[in-house]
Length: 216
Image 1: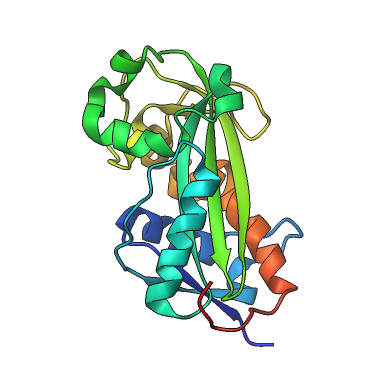
Image 2: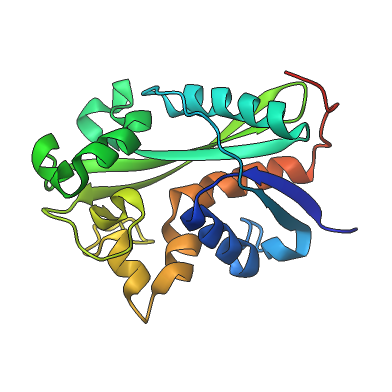
């Protein structure tokens, strides 16, 4: 059976870089190598983001917009941080990106979040032409006292993920990517909330045909 093509709508060069790693060396929960079953067709379209705290609401709206442009089944993905003590409100969630864009290196100071326990949550929305489905992934961690590492991918410089065993980590995502023993493949395969969400989606897509290519 030929690989299933996944149309992924994103204009982010960092997301492209990470999905290429995921496709090349990533694996599904059953041990299947991603590249043996799937290919990714990246479509760098611009989508007007909807500002919502709830990431699920946000990506549902975005994938409908993406489908209206592409007219083929497609996915979008968005990630954000959720403070443990605001878990029931999913805050800041979908507002993490505009907050980071505004505050930059002052994010930790302005939010009083140094040492704070957080969840990095990613949500993938898939539109098959008739319905929209969402798939989420989470990585628990803490916020560093100040930005560490130089990889300029939003809050990667302040998020310290727990390690693969669920124990508190010591390096930010950015530092992990820059570490020669670890690097981007380690982040993508073993830690990334986005990869966890993508695995759930790919399992679904492997057993479900896309719907009619009609407007939602």
